[in-house]
Image 1: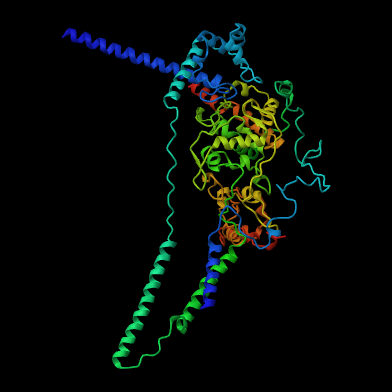
Image 2: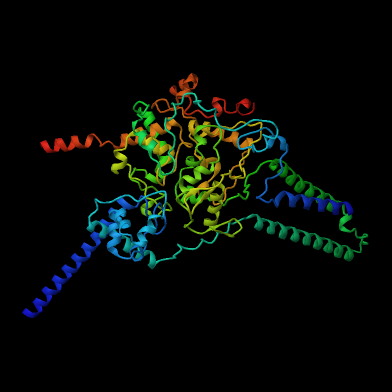
Length: 208
Length: 421
């Protein structure tokens, strides 16, 4: 009788620990040293490395370029209120040759992921974040297809704006590689060109 | 009769005139909207402050409409008049000066102001209509309680039946004159003890094995994060692509937690939360604007001045999905090469206010998917992954119609050292 009582109490205890789990806390693991790495991994704290005499500053050595990457943009970000480099960047030409078909598909993907949310899928400056002023974003994004400022903007200056940001737009230098940004410039310029098929059609219609 | 006719004519005329007038009015407002979007909207919003101040009630703020029109066309001239308000508003956003709009005619400016006025009226008419409160949480139907109650009832019934059976036997024995045996209490009854022992072993064994299997599996883990960041608002309502913030998922091993500067790409403009009300899992309401202030503190950004003023520091988000050290997992291998959608493993993140672990992330779960998932082998149409061209045997078998598809396990997806090395 006594043993049965002890046994059932133990059982109930086990059931409680087994079922009533707080989902805010992680469950126990078999080998914590394996489950939670002791090695320094991505997002490990690097705060006390210096105290241990370890040098680490997480930035590439200055002047180095990633393998396979284009040379970096020659102009730094302007200080507040200054536009020297913004204007100077007009002179920089796009180092990439015109996009191939596959590259164009990739550039469109990059556009939809990074730009489309504000500038719109159709580049009409009306993405889901703005929605004719009904979205949370208070500034109207540029209409990349028709706005004369963007249509007439030299490629180098467009690259500057994508990299460092302009007006309300933030900079994308940290999210997109140099190659990806030049691809986007190509892609947007390509889209802005008037479709070659349309004038031909009107010509033939006029002849008739 | 003729009198009636003239009256009818007059009414018809006035109706036409009125409708024409109202159309003209609407056309002006329409023009105003187009002009506003083309010229003003990049910096101004009607309801909220942006690069420039909010424009609702702008006419009533200015001392005279004439001065406002002057300001809009060339603000320098308005400041030159020495008007106190014009001088004050020049300093509204010290870093950025308003553009000059000499190309706009007085009529254009009027149309824009008319549009702003109609929008202001619309705003004032419905100042605080919160679109529908939170939908009542639907109770999830859970059958386990029902089954439990049923089991209990059956157990009680069977106990009663056993007791009744014993009583009846005793009665029968009394009638037949068989001397009643000394009654044995149930806890010393061998069959009772055996039954109880077996039942206890089964129950204990079930829970013990469940607990042992579940140890280290974190399905459903939903920790509190330092900032109430709602994926539902960002990825759901506002349709921001997962890769906007977690771009690493397509490029490499880690999906990456975005650094604060990625948040600030949009939040240097979006300074307050104006969407549907937010609730934590336990039902407490969350003030989105207060949560945004935590972000601004981490970024060292002052929303009042639109400037970075302090030292930024990273936000320490709590990691949810964790694989042990002895497992290798690469995001890009799955999303880019395998074309697996984020939601397949992470669940409907775009509907979660607070993220929880959707999948088991156990080895059985991985292996099962590797057995079932087909790789992009479609070389007939030329769309397949070129890497797989080295699997000549499978291509031959597909051509000979011996197999219709190739799964991940067929190309070595179950090899131990694919993931453990």
